[in-house]
Length: 343
Image (cartoon, rainbow, N blue to C red):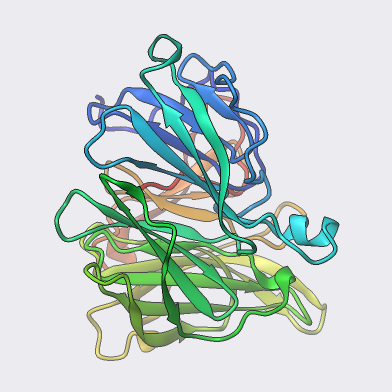
């Protein structure tokens, strides 16, 4: 109501990376999750709400999508996790969804179906796009050299995806980290590939997305100069921001975290790179932190700290975007690498 981000200090979430929450249109919290456990708005574990197949160490562990035509049914999509491949002899937990019915448990919700598998293996990437009709959705994930778009209608989830085979083949599961986001307009998808093996590097790629067919096309390698991780579009879909770590080949390790910007209206998008800031790394780890647009149209950045950084005017280019480092205090609580995405 104040127009400013206000920390809530009674939540029960403790996650390294991915997290998710969903509210009603007027901003009333419905439930939240780390991809493993679902919590009610009263911060209790929802009935049947444990054991989801997401992960606290997945870049985008979960995404909630409302069922079209329903005021009570929500789908929780959970992405795969590099650690699951490391502990399951090279197999992941896959791309799955669970169903929440908010008409149950006195209006606090109940998980009625759990871990329905859509893909046997997947990556840590997931985003959702509203269809052109304004009612239905596409949920998109990535695995190896393909994007999988699942259509969500009043009839439920079409479990046969639209597959776009495009882009590089990210075959090593150690390189499945990194975020994926759709533009607010819904006509583009950006993806970060956080490459750990055989050596540190990263890629930021951009695609056109057809909201009618679910197909991706017209790939652009925007930049590969950083170990990219987080990505986000401005609210007018004309600016693209990403977080990435600098790799020092002499030391064989990552160093500073850079927040960079690209002008999507420029004749040469790659050449429009503008570095908003370079943050000295004060913690162990090779992840550059999530970027997430909020309802106030500002973009927030999260790394381990007692505050978030913010881009106040992301529709503007360069210094006019107004990046402010660690300017949003968390009331004594600490952030890690994740922020909750939404459609």
